[in-house]
Amino acid sequence: MMKEIKLALDWTANTNHSGFYVAKAKGFYKEAEIELQIQTPDTDNYKHTPAKKVELGLADVAICPFESIVSYNTKKNKFNALAVAAIYREDISAVVTLKESGLDSPKDLEGKSYASYKARYEDGIVARMIKNDGGEGNLELAYPDKLGIWETLLTKKYDATWIFMNWEGIHAKAKRIPLNTFKLSDYGIPYSYSPVLMTGKEGLMQDLEGYESFLKATKQGFLYAKENPQYAADCLAPFVTESDRDIDLLESQQFSNRFYGNEANWGMLEEANVNQFLGWLHEEGLEPVLLNYSDLVYNGFKL
Image (cartoon, rainbow, N blue to C red):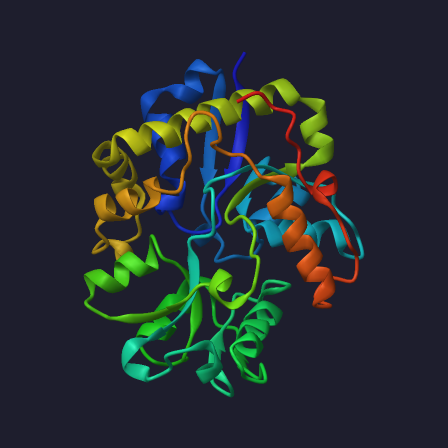
């Protein structure tokens, strides 16, 4: 009997999701007796975040940054969210400005405008990056519609934002718009995994076998995309929004492939990496509760 799994994506279809579309097209989910339904946030313009959809029972699995796992486990009405896999082995995001802005370093963002996704720790993380570069960490924060944030940078409405280099970074290249990129790790911030696959502990424990089958098929999809980037780009293309049509999907896929890992380590969230980030959040006062790896990650699957 087929198991239905509803997957809430963190963004409109992009290369961070190509493994899901490849696994569907190749029949990997069908072979695993999984019927996958993919939800994208443009259907309700982020009325609910992907993680919130899992909490509300509107989705079974969500794509989100690891910080969301922390946030849901420490909010007033706690939800036992667990990370079950990481898409990439390392962080491929960056805070960016337009090259022409002259904002060439995080400290140059002092007093400048930042288009925020309003994630719980985001503004504090960016402020700390500025401080670590010699600034005071004062930002003029703005909270535009999430799906329009990238456009606000391109139109110079705001000075900086946070992007994925394999998507908006490739988009900027296609538009011949040079960027200044500030990676968190270059400024003393031990950022963890993003994006990750999350689910609720209660639902997970009720069907470990089903979720393991889903993750095995997903792993197949991402590793197939790595070996067959043009096929992956072709699978993704029909689902890309009109505003992203000028992104070179093959180039984006090839960029992403370097960070997937391999048969032995795809999806793994390493304990030392996670605990370092959790400790940093606590030390910085961004999270008063000190959690650890076992509170937030389920790693009992054999993928």
